[in-house]
Every structure is written in structure tokens, then in C-alpha cells.
Amino acid sequence: MNATLPRDWSVLADRLAGWVPPEGPFEPAGTWKLSYQRHALIPEPGGKPAGGPAGSLVIEIVPETGGPRVQVTEAVVTGATTVTTAAAYQCAADQLLTPQRWSLDIRWVSRMPLVPVAGLDQKRSGRVEGHELVFTAAKEHRRPAPQRWTASWLLFAVLPHLPFAAGPALDFDLFEEGELHKPEQKLAYAGEQTVALGGKNVALHVFEQFGRGVLPTRWWLDTKHRVLLSASERHLHLLGSRAPGATT
Image 1 (cartoon, helix red, strand yellow):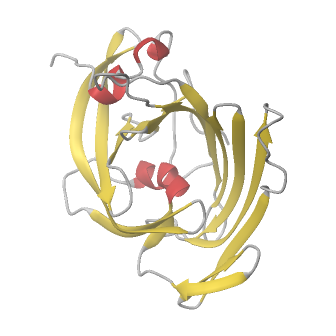
Image 2 (cartoon, rainbow, N blue to C red):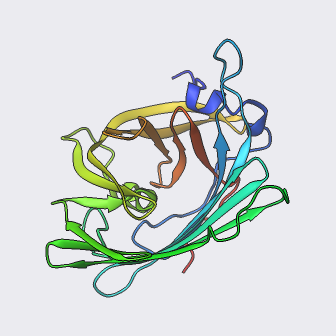
């Protein structure tokens, strides 16, 4: 099979120079920590994708009795402003790692003195009570819990458990940044594709995600079920070069 460089990878252009696919073991059900670089995709005149690095994302998972604990740290860089979110999730031991309790600590930093960020820092939390989701920020509010749901960051930990096989799409609702509801999501296996990366042909497996309120996203996993790349039309997350596998 001849390797190709699909659009999700080719838009990185020179940013892929020196990037090498990770090697070594990876156990989705074990203890692991993976670090990603966040890239913005900003169209140039004529529609050609461009952009550059725009932050980072770290996902760390620790199995526990009753369900894993997931720690997320994401830094989103926009111009001279960086918004860093540290999120902690206690999850159920189900297919979607459904959050049971969670907390978010959001911090704003600006390198421009004329850009006011004082007072923008936030602390949020939430929990499941029966058939309700309870969100706490400046005040508490409740909403009915969807039948099947997860948090957007947790997809990096959900996907490694999915089989590389065609079948019915996984249906669920999504919550971004703790409480932004994105209903009627679907996640489906799209097949295997060989990509030329780091000077060699690499077999990757692709999942496609689409639904209300989100841009279609493609997830690229290696044969160990490690997420290497998540890519939409606006931004993507690329796993750190030579990233380690599971750590125990």
C-alpha cells in the first residue's frame, strides 16, 4: 500500500519536521500520561490552511476501584493571552468514562498590560446526583443528565478502548469545558490508513466524530490504540514526538 499524507497531517507542514511517531507499549486500561501540542488552523488568502502552535494538552489517567481518575491540563494561547484549565474527573468504569464528580480551575495570563484579565479566573465543579447533573460556579444549577454522555477531554481516554472494527456508531452527548452541552454526537470507526511519518510508512486507524454544535473531528490512533492526532477544521492536537507509552 502506498502511503499518503492526508489533509489532517499535511496542514502541519514544517511543524511535522523532526516529529517521530511514538514507540513502545501502551495499555489503555493502565496508568498513563500523554502530552499534546495544540495547533491553530488559520486559513490564508485563498483558503490554504496555515497557523501555528497555540498551546498544549496533557491527559493523565489513573485506574481506581469503581472507575478511573483523569487529570487534564490544557493551555490555550490566543495572541498574548493564555488560558490554562486544570480539570480533574472521577469517572465511572463504563464505555464513555462518564464523569461522576469533576472540578475545573481556570487561570488567565496576559503578556500585554493593556489586556485586562484580572477577575477572569474561575473555579467550577460538578457532580452527578441521581438523574441530574449539578454544576457549581458562582451559583449552583441543575439539569437532567443525558442517557449517555461524557466530557470532551475524556474522549482522549475513551477512544483507546474502542475496537478497530466497523460497526454501529457510538451515540452520546458531550459537555465541553465542563458544562457546554453538545447533544447528539456520533463516533464511528472509519478504517485503517497508511501515512508517511518520520521517514516510514505508519499504519493508523481513524475514527470520525460529528454532531450538533461541534466541528467534525477525525481521530488518528496507532496500532497500540494511542491517540496520535485529533483534527478539526479549526485546530488539532498532535502527540508529543517520541511520546512514552503507559507508565506504571
